[in-house]
Each structure stands twice: as C-alpha cells, then as structure tokens.
Length: 105
Length: 158
Image (cartoon, rainbow over all chains, first blue to last red; front, side):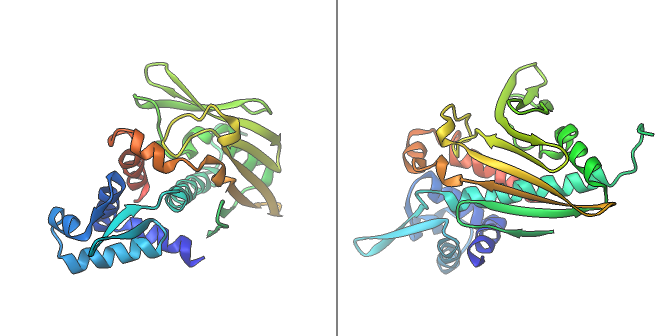
C-alpha cells in the first residue's frame, strides 16, 4: 500500500525525522518548528505534509494557525519500525543461512 | 524480497538458497545473530539472545552484566514449517505484562525446491498494543518515550 511506503520514506529523511521527533515531544505550530530547524518555513510545511500523508502526523486549527501533533494511535509509526526491523532480520538470516556450513559435516 | 502489509500487520518475506530443514534450524538456533542488536531494552549491551526451541519457551536477551529481558513467548514450534511467538513489547518500548495487549509473529518456511526455501514473516494484531499511545506519551519522560523509540528506528535505517 502507498500508505506503508509513505510511512517508511517519511521517516527515512533526517530532516523529516527531526520534525517528527519535535511534534512527538509535544504538539507545535509550523512557525515554532521553523525556528528550531535550519530550514525555511515552506520547507517545514512541505515535510509536515509528507508526514501527514503518511499517517504519522495530525493537525488541528487553533485560532489562525495549525498545530501539528504525532498521530495519536501511532500505529503507522509502529508498523514502519517493525517493517524495518524484520526486513533487516531476514536479510541477516539470508546471509547466515547461505554461508556454507562450517563445523557441520 | 517483497514487503506488504494490512493495516494491523506487517508482512515481509525472503527466498534463501538453503533446504527447508536447514532454514528452520538456522532461523531458530542462530536467532541471536539474526535479530538486530539495536533492539535492546536492557540498560547494558546484549551479550546474547536466547531462543528456547519449544512451545512455552521464551525468547530473551541476556545483557553483558547477566541481566535478562524476556520479550517473547514461543506459541507454536513446528519444525521445519512454522514458528509463532508473541511480541511482549509495548509501543513505549517496555515489557507488556498483559498478554491481551501483545501482538504475535508467525514465520512460515515453504520449500520451493529441495535447495530453496521461501520464508514468510507476519507480525500481526498490532492494534492489540493500543490504544494508549497518546496517554503513555504524555506520561512518559521525553527521553524514555517516543524519542527513544525513534532513536532506535533511526538506528535501523542504514
């Protein structure tokens, strides 16, 4: 599903991961995120859009600004993490199982 | 290798050039070398991961100081076809004592040829871990909650 791919790709980018960590710490508006990051406000908005499309971040209106927060149920992040975890594990498994047996006869 | 997933599960598979018996044996006996080391709930480095090869057995990490972290229970052990174990780790990265709130991992071994095995892994019932992320996140110190979890996630991205 595009959803899953978006989740992995979204957290694979270091800038985006930092933004996600900031909003996971506590909900924040774009302007505050832009202040803490060495990137422009439009760039932060673009990253937030990707995170939102990936289901990792939600937003709500508060007065005339939008507040961004980590997705409350976090399932997308959990799935992205586990997918990476098990893919890494199976790749290690393949490398190990395809080695010629050493002590076995 | 391919990866696909339903909403509450994660699936991944791989084809290895090994007979099914060997594939099953290596997966369970060498699990210590297969599990990514970054995944660690102990306060110290992991010396080894032990996989007890029987129903009712446990999978646990043993730290370099001898401490143990039991994070899975073996639910099915059917060589050379299938193994199922629980995932007793909460999204807050702590051991989940309530078995109703744990997910499970099934690994199936399918012989494509006498020398080639397809391994399909499904980590399912992820929704059993929640809800509660939000409250847990609010109640857990920043360095123990999500950021730590993300740090580990980042560690796995090579």
